[in-house]
Image (cartoon, rainbow, N blue to C red; front, side, top):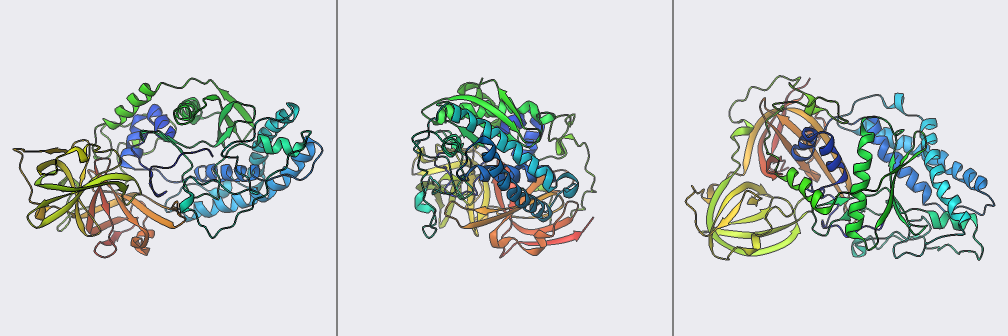
Length: 534
């Protein structure tokens, strides 16, 4: 995929604060759903269609990356692709079922929705849509194929945006296709093969706006006919509540492509695998200023972790879950010392000291590039850092002198106190606000709540090293907060969590995401006890 170098050094970084196609369309469908999903981070249970949507797309892309044998007709090409469909359908079904069964929180019966025949039919429909491109290419006598970043193929090496981080011990096939003087069906397949997300590449294969406030990842990109067409793969049939989001999603990709590439997008399509529908969408992206307005509206949304929402949505938009609830099905916990309500956790402090040692942008624990510095008062030195990318871009403009930092978010990382700055923070030369001594910064909390949702993600960083992240949300009867654990901090107790479990967490580290408290598990000091199970 002709993507850009990710601003994150590591692939775990998925800044919720960026404008993406999914956040945009969610916001347009139901702003309350967007708020809970992208600001609070609260998601619903995993269902079979969510799992298989990703797995089937990957299987189709993998089929398209193959190189056909010598054939004399489109019919023979189809027969060859059918042999690949059988293999990839079976593998996709096994992979999807395994992921669904391994999920911490899921709903539905996988076997009632998916079988080999259904998955095979979807893959055949997807290949048929691609064969239409191949036939057009053959009849046109060929097309463009010599690009700086070729369409990925199993017979040629993958393209890395950060080759210095790729595993140098892996040897890739390197057998370029030899084109004939007169076009053959193999030539047409090779030329018409689209750009796809290469499964051999652990890097994020996204487009990133130069100002880093927007990002997006295309499914397929066709350029063989001299025109750039962006295609999104859908597992459905073109109907349903989510279908209305397709124009907004694809036009966002088109706009982002125009912002990040020399040539412009000429067309956008949705390919529906259930019935093989090719839906051509009108190319009509918003202007950059309009997307910025939407982004600013998102950023200015009032941040409050009270839950449930004071007014629920009507539940008629696709994907609504928590936003349509007016009450929670679980009883709130009885909070006793040493625990405290989530509302009692201090969110903003003002400190005074000497600013020094500006650094960054460097990756934080999510792999996101943030600015940082140090502030010293007496013998106490504390790191200050942006709470997320571009949360406080003027940090290094402040004088390296005695200052007052107002509205900082207190936290801790690896046992060391830390202050996080965002849009509500400031660095002043003086202030009349009440100050907190840096030696008295609050860095930990004891909380008691009911688990509302839970999930675990695994993957590989850009350098190929594995990472794991487990997150769950607890509700104390009035407010909700995210709890996260990384790598070795994930233990058997956390893996056993399910919605409705009542837990007590002591000595959780304070962190912040989107201006909201985030509790982090430290394997050395944090303790968690399951008080009851539903």
